[in-house]
Each structure stands twice: as structure tokens, then as C-alpha cells.
Amino acid sequence: QFVDKLVAFARTAKMGDPMNADTQVGPVTNPPQYKKILDYLEIAKGEGANPVLGGAKASRPECGSGWFVEPTIFTGVNNRMRIAQEEVFGPVLSVIPFADEDEAIEIGNDVVFGLAAGVWTQSMRRAFKMSERLQAGTVWVNTYRAVSYLSPFGGYKRSGLGRESGQEMIREYLQTKSVWISLATEVPNPFIMR
Image 1 (cartoon, rainbow, N blue to C red):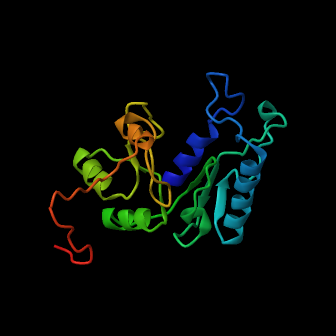
Image 2 (image 1 turned 60 degrees about the vertical axis):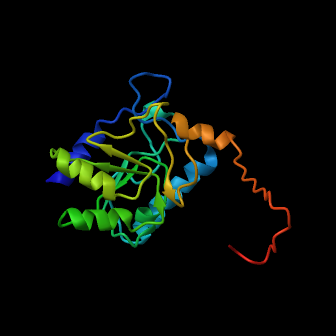
């Protein structure tokens, strides 16, 4: 029932020119990334994932000959599959079932990347608890892709070091230095730690 509603919602995504305010899914930014996403779709199918929506390049008239990928939803995904482990950076969603909150956290953290995560819940207590436990640089609750230049953005694990935006970004432009000076009248032995 959840997957059916998710697919029905995703079918309504308006694809097209990113300069049009009504567009929700624009083209991929460059040919290598476009190819990479299409390769991931084939890898996922080869590993047993089931595309219940999309799974190929877009053929809608509004997409013309641009680098568009259909919004894609896979079921039958487990956390050992590359589609669940790697950063695709395309309109691809994997549905991975879980029994409870602990298992959801375990699945979410059992990856080498940690750029972002999303939590959907009516319980603010659960939202805060899960946000704290998820190993991701950004956690969205009941929304996705909300951004502000005032808020730091960056990942955990292999999703990168440092932060863009916010006060954290300023540190990227600074160089920190430590200087140690001895005022002793005799030069201490540098091989003895005290």
C-alpha cells in the first residue's frame, strides 16, 4: 500500500526545463553523470532490484533530447546492493523495508557515505531521536532538500570533509597554526616528554 501511494505521487513529478518554475525534475547536469545514473539503474536490475517506476532514460516529449532520467523507484532492494550503498545523485529512490526504529537506523547507518537522510514521522520525539542517531551531515524531517545558506551543509564518512554555507564554511578559508615557545634558560631535551 505504501509503495503504491509512493509510485502514484512520483508519477506526478513535472519534468522539463529547470528555468520553468513548475519543473520538479530537470536534466542531469552533464553527460558523464547521466551515463553514471543509467549505469546504476542497470546494475540495480542486475542485482535483483525491481523498478516499479522508471528505471530508464526519460522519453517524455517535454524532455526533448536532454539528459533526463525518469524518476525511478526500486523495490526488492537490500543494503548489500550498490544502489543502496553508493551515491547515485539522480532521481532514484530505493524502498528498503524495516521492522522497527532500531532496524531503520541500522540500515541507514550501514553505508560508507553519509551526506543526507530523511525521516518521516508524526512524533517529534522520534524525529529528534532518529536525527541524533543517523550518521549523516544533514537530516530532513517531514521534508526533503530544504536548504539555507545560513545552515552548514556537508557529509559524514566518505561523503566529504568540511562544510558549505553557515559559519562552518568560514573555517575552510582559515589556516590554524600552533606555536610552542620555551622560555627556559637551558634548552630542554626534545626527546623527553614532560
